[in-house]
Image 1 (cartoon, helix red, strand yellow):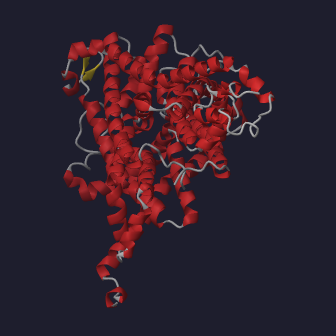
Image 2 (cartoon, each protein chain N blue to C red):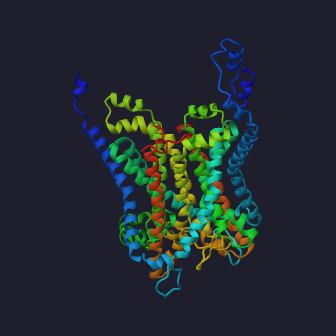
Length: 352
Length: 287
């Protein structure tokens, strides 16, 4: 039984040199493998082809991600050509949205999207960071799993159910209690003035805040966990209190990652459709007060896309979608780069 | 050492106290809406849930009874199509990134997947409308399934990749050392070792798309009648909830709550199942 036959292993095991050396005849008596498995290995030529097929089909799967992205850009650009050619840059500054006379300006929608997202961020960021700090630094161990699971559940509730709840619970609550109170004490700022409908920018902002808290909180938790334990111990050993430890050792180290989480939340808020459509009031105008109804880019598409009859109308709506796509891609890319720079590309997802 | 035994300054103690209090309050404020939503959903939903709701199709306004049976079946069909598209492509992409992943190409795929995950669902809806509905000239369950399937790919791919990376290299080497070809080693040994984590990713992706409404508005479109043909406009639970919620009729509002309850039960069961699977298994997350 010579060892030259054994080098049939080569395609499978890349390191053949040690085998050769033994084969040169140092202790041939010791290594006499049974013949049976070898026969199977000899027939493995087909499996070489299968390996190739396997590899290429996986390559196609992974390429599908890039292909989908490219197709999105291509389709949206080509379908919005008509509107781009007709309105040019004036599309973004135009204030009128009149499908009947074919005059389209997206300003009210851009304004509504930005304001509702901003309100959402102002409300969500402190709460989300607070929850993340609570879970990683303060919470007793047995409560940790429960709290983070509950926050996870918040992320699993569909947008349309948030909207349903918003219409029947949040909006009446705002109309009857919160808005009169705000108008009474902060009415002079102009931001909280005008008739209290319940639904409007404020309601949309609040529901968006509830929806993006889980995203910001879970990313923040990941980055907080990534802060080395030794940093915390070092600061505590200097005699710091809990708060000083969190401020100096944890938040300062994690600030880039938290920023990433916030931007990711912003990306979600910008594109959120259903809950906002149900709560913002859907009126295309630029109003200063948060009580006033507004309209967002996503909700105008949701409401009018299937009713758009002529080509220009459809094309204008697709252009809004294209803008939304470009903005969210940029926002998400920035967020991912920030988060990757902290966690080195791997997410600590399941730690409770 | 005298300084060590000195009591903390009142200011530092107060700041610390405020900090602990505030982050506790933040936790409560975040959990409160969840309690409120679930409580109200169960309270409103249970009352309107009955056998007719689960077996009948929608009735015209004013007629009592009627249900969402066609929407439940339609949702199942759309989600089935979505799973057939999203799960294989997602797992394939994830396996490629983890097992053959070196160099710039894989980094680009990973990054694109993360960015794709953040693309608003309504934009996915428009794109699929342009890609599938326009050439076909009609709305269909198939196009809805394509839209949701595309949305599943990035989540499934990224979790699969992360979970495969946690499989120790010794297991791969052991499999290859037995002389089995690489495709079998990957599918039957590496992927199987990580299967719990991969299933988690699939269920999370499923739970996410199960409640998606926006991309279905102009792909599956909705339907008031029975339809089992995947090439026709099909009712879906989220669309039906949306349509009923913004309608002015009390009876329809009640049905919207019942539909929402069914939808949320479906999703919570999926998420809880994930939790059970992952907490029992060995594939806990790192750190």
